[in-house]
Length: 256
Image (tube, rainbow, N blue to C red; front, side):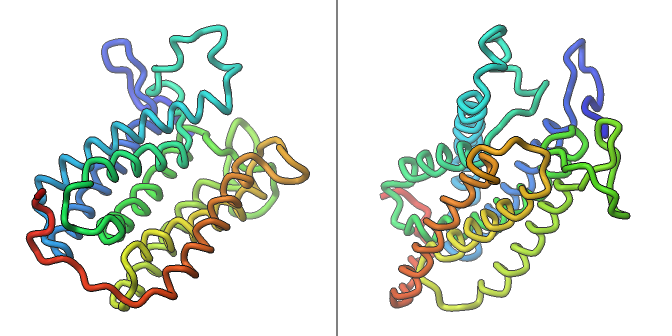
């Protein structure tokens, strides 16, 4: 575990921050290629959209973290903006903020919102997996103490490598999305499937995370993931009942 990778002019740069940046680069690269290849969207437009979505996601993820851990910021409010020090982000808060931004930004595009999200889905999952490496180095989501052979030392205790579990789950989700990509699916199905699988994975892995229970035996992360799994599962059933819809023409990325 290495929380601080280096010191830049007196500012400590966290390992999570570095890998989060790498995750953004990877997600944008995959999204640009997929949106251009599958939908004909101008890569520059995708880049602009991705950058705005990242900013919205960081803000939304930080707000979510502050809301679930307000005690950390009451004494020192300046910590609310020192993301590079603690790496505190909530995934679903970031996701909701980014989705709202994408919806508003692309409202006048002729490409369907669901088809665009499908093109972004693999990049999102890849970025999540990369971010988990930073979470491992930083000590975020520490696992419970265990004696399994693959346990790792975190805070001087042998623990479940829960971050690796989540990274492997992301890799599995990528393979599933790749297998489904050739199917005739309603727009939005791949993205919804990715969220469903990620939520299920997080719910299961949280049984091994050293986190306090919020309701019965379940952690706050499990409650959030459970809600997302139920909602996206119901949405998947609804999408499966729809007849496949033809995608827009290659000029779809151009605003009208």
